[in-house]
Length: 73
Image (cartoon, rainbow, N blue to C red; front, side, top):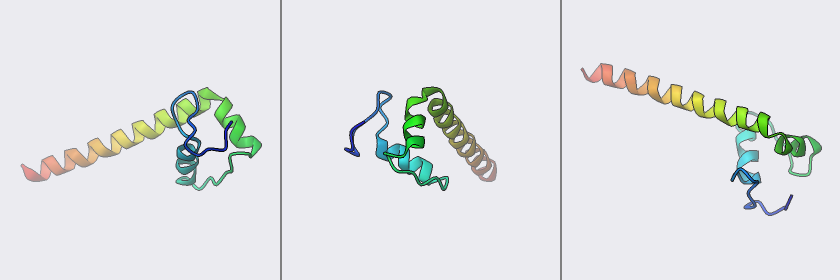
Protein backbone atom coordinates (compact mmCIF):
# COMPACT_ATOMS: atom_id res chain seq x y z
CA UNK A 1 0.00 0.00 0.00
CA UNK A 2 1.26 3.44 -0.85
CA UNK A 3 2.03 5.95 1.88
CA UNK A 4 0.26 8.62 -0.22
CA UNK A 5 -2.77 9.70 1.90
CA UNK A 6 -4.77 10.34 -1.27
CA UNK A 7 -4.16 6.78 -2.49
CA UNK A 8 -7.49 4.95 -2.55
CA UNK A 9 -7.90 1.27 -1.91
CA UNK A 10 -9.86 -0.81 -4.43
CA UNK A 11 -13.20 0.20 -2.86
CA UNK A 12 -12.46 3.87 -3.48
CA UNK A 13 -11.78 4.79 0.16
CA UNK A 14 -8.56 6.65 0.85
CA UNK A 15 -6.33 5.47 3.65
CA UNK A 16 -6.68 8.91 5.22
CA UNK A 17 -10.49 8.70 5.11
CA UNK A 18 -10.44 5.30 6.81
CA UNK A 19 -8.09 6.60 9.50
CA UNK A 20 -10.37 9.60 10.12
CA UNK A 21 -13.45 7.40 10.44
CA UNK A 22 -11.69 5.12 12.92
CA UNK A 23 -10.40 8.16 14.84
CA UNK A 24 -13.97 9.39 15.27
CA UNK A 25 -14.51 6.27 17.37
CA UNK A 26 -11.31 6.73 19.35
CA UNK A 27 -9.24 4.29 17.29
CA UNK A 28 -5.95 5.96 16.42
CA UNK A 29 -3.96 3.74 14.11
CA UNK A 30 -1.07 4.24 11.68
CA UNK A 31 -1.12 2.95 8.12
CA UNK A 32 1.92 0.72 8.71
CA UNK A 33 0.35 -0.89 11.81
CA UNK A 34 -0.30 -4.60 11.14
CA UNK A 35 -3.83 -4.27 12.54
CA UNK A 36 -4.62 -1.52 10.03
CA UNK A 37 -3.34 -3.71 7.20
CA UNK A 38 -5.56 -6.57 8.35
CA UNK A 39 -8.56 -4.22 8.37
CA UNK A 40 -7.78 -3.10 4.83
CA UNK A 41 -7.38 -6.68 3.67
CA UNK A 42 -10.60 -7.84 5.30
CA UNK A 43 -13.26 -6.37 3.00
CA UNK A 44 -16.10 -8.05 4.88
CA UNK A 45 -15.25 -6.26 8.12
CA UNK A 46 -14.76 -2.89 6.43
CA UNK A 47 -17.93 -3.17 4.38
CA UNK A 48 -19.94 -4.14 7.47
CA UNK A 49 -18.45 -1.25 9.46
CA UNK A 50 -19.22 1.35 6.80
CA UNK A 51 -22.68 -0.09 6.11
CA UNK A 52 -23.55 0.16 9.81
CA UNK A 53 -22.17 3.70 10.01
CA UNK A 54 -24.24 4.69 6.98
CA UNK A 55 -27.37 3.01 8.38
CA UNK A 56 -26.86 4.73 11.73
CA UNK A 57 -26.48 8.11 10.02
CA UNK A 58 -29.62 7.47 7.96
CA UNK A 59 -31.64 6.46 11.05
CA UNK A 60 -30.45 9.53 12.93
CA UNK A 61 -31.18 11.84 10.00
CA UNK A 62 -34.65 10.41 9.44
CA UNK A 63 -35.51 10.59 13.14
CA UNK A 64 -34.51 14.27 13.30
CA UNK A 65 -36.48 15.02 10.14
CA UNK A 66 -39.64 13.38 11.54
CA UNK A 67 -39.42 15.36 14.79
CA UNK A 68 -38.97 18.60 12.86
CA UNK A 69 -41.92 17.89 10.56
CA UNK A 70 -44.11 17.01 13.57
CA UNK A 71 -43.25 20.31 15.25
CA UNK A 72 -44.12 22.24 12.10
CA UNK A 73 -47.64 20.74 11.90
